[in-house]
Image 1 (cartoon, helix red, strand yellow):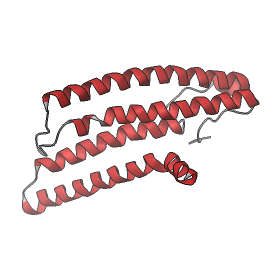
Image 2: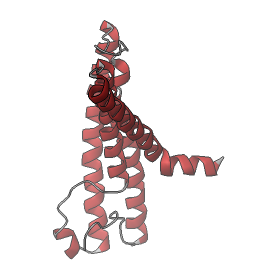
Image 3: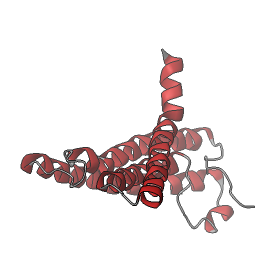
Image 4: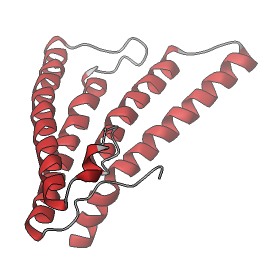
Length: 171
């Protein structure tokens, strides 16, 4: 059971991204072919692509929090020791956590209003709740990943080890 939980923790967002990316690419390819070959396109295809992209962005933001891949200015961090660097990252995690919790609350409010009034999409005629849920799902995943990051940084601070800074893109 723990192996399954670890696999989900490690790869759940990546699997979801794969599903949404494949859905986006296949739908877009079908719509382009329909438009060019049959001179016909559907409104639902554009909606599937748009909402798949929105889910891609919000789930991708969660992965970026997990891997510390968001853009940051880290020039000064190179001159800090492991303890001070851990404190800076903990402070950043706490600030980001506060913002994510507030954004999660307000994004759930938007979903609630949409559900209350029964909004539906124009082409698919599906409840907008399913599409608006991308934002709270993304922020909920970010909150989870920020808690994990905070705990990881606290362990690094306690043990005097180097804090996890993510993978380097460039040297």
